[in-house]
Length: 368
Image 1 (tube, rainbow, N blue to C red):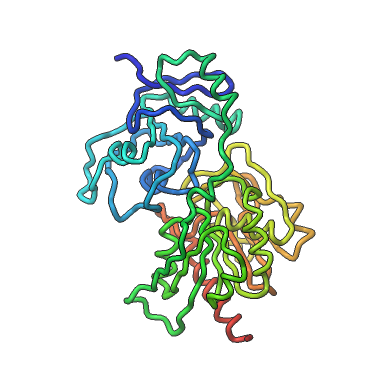
Image 2: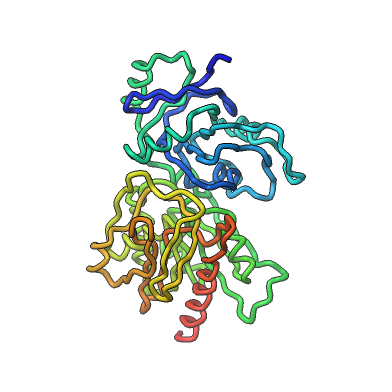
């Protein structure tokens, strides 16, 4: 069988395979994810905007796509690269095949690639630009395309909602107190909203560029900083907004929100060689000495040394590479984590963080 598609990395390497999904040519940043399940959540996670994701688990597509499991209404992932694609879903919950969804949202895919070799190259060389193109495209032409293309830096603006929206708490949630949280949407996963609604929290989601005055006018008990794609320094407006909110309301950040909170306090961030993406990253809670198995998806991290000159303290560290996974400022009722407590690829070790947020809002309310 003749190959129909290929990848051209910016170092000149080529990987041949067969196309599925949308038949379009794209330039993306290539990354990998080691999760064994959850390709639907990965495909619909706004944090993967402009990224081509290599799935290290070899079989993808076998349980289809369930309408209840999307993390966003309009997936913006750059592309999907797999070893073997299965187009005959076995799950009774499946409403569409993976390929049908990818065609609907113009997401190209390539299967039959040696994903083990490709994954090793990303680990050795780091994330880089990649061109998903026809197998007949000359490599020199592809390299010219890569050289003249830049991965856009407007990802947060692209994926953030444009209007304020209220998500009311679940009717079956029974809590003594009712809390109202304003969530700044930088590419927010829907399961974060579900996790707070299940705990009796009303969530008012606002666009990424909403100013602090507008946020405070909504009288929130707390402010949540969402996950999202790209470099946190690409959104100085959000960093400044958070800086103005510090001390005025409890704050909880996840992933990009963790980086933004740290930057607002004066810390620095940097880009990791190939990022953290998977469902089994071990993280140590320095407050309890417990180990959490976490779900992660990020390219950037907070610089450890830069935290020493801020009011923040490190609360969590990654046991694979000792990167900062959590910070807090007790006096300001502000904290954040680099990983995803709302994501449950099996372990649910980190769900307690939403309860900590509730406790902070309770304690802050009692002091007013």
